[in-house]
Length: 217
Ligand SMILES: N[C@@H](CCC(=O)N[C@@H](CS)C(=O)NCC(=O)O)C(=O)O
Image (cartoon, rainbow, N blue to C red; front, side, top):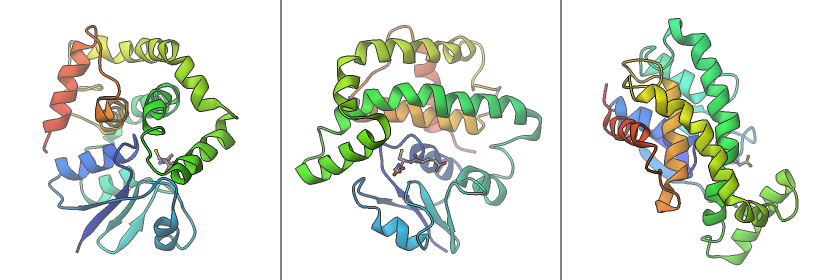
C-alpha cells in the first residue's frame, strides 16, 4: 500500500519523518501543503488536525496525536530503533530540549527569510497573521532586528551537541535514535535554502549532519 507524507519541506517536524522513512527504505510520496491553506489536512483527518506532518501509511492516517508519527513508525517500521527502551529518559530530556528551547530560536532565524520569500501577498499575509496571533504584532520584524542575538543563543545551545559529537557518532551513542532525526530536522530547517549556515566552530555537527543525511538501516 502507498505511503504519503503531507509536509512543508522546510518544517523541522517534517524533515525528521522524511529522513526516517528514507533511512528505513520505505518508498513514499511527498505532498507539499501550502502554509496558508490547511484544507487537505482537515479533510484527511476529518477536522481533527491542521498541522504538518501528517502521514498516510498502509491505509492509516497518522499525526502527532495520542501516538506521535515517530512512535507509530517505530512500532510499524523501524522495530524499536528510534526509541530504544534503555534510552527512554535521556531521549525524553533531549527531545524536550530540541523541540522547545532549540526550535524556539531556530525557527525565527528561518522565518525572517521564509516569509518574505512567499510570493503571493495574500498568502504571505496569512502566514504573518498566524505568527502574529501567536507571538504578537510585528514579531517577524523584531526577529529580523534581533537575528544576531537569536543566532548567538542558538549557537550556545548547539554547542551542547558539538562537544558530544566530537567523540561519538550520534547524539546518544553509536547508532542514531529519534533525537538525532529531530535535531537533523532542526538543522535542515535552519539551513533550508542556504538561509543560514553552520559556523567554523560547528565542525563536529557538520560531520554528524553528513552521517545523518546518508544513514540507512
Ligand atoms: N508535531 C507537532 C507540531 C507540528 C507543527 O508545529 N507543525 C507546524 C509546521 S513546522 C505547523 O503545521 N503549524 C501550523 C499550525 O500550527 O497552524 C505536534 O503537533 O505536536
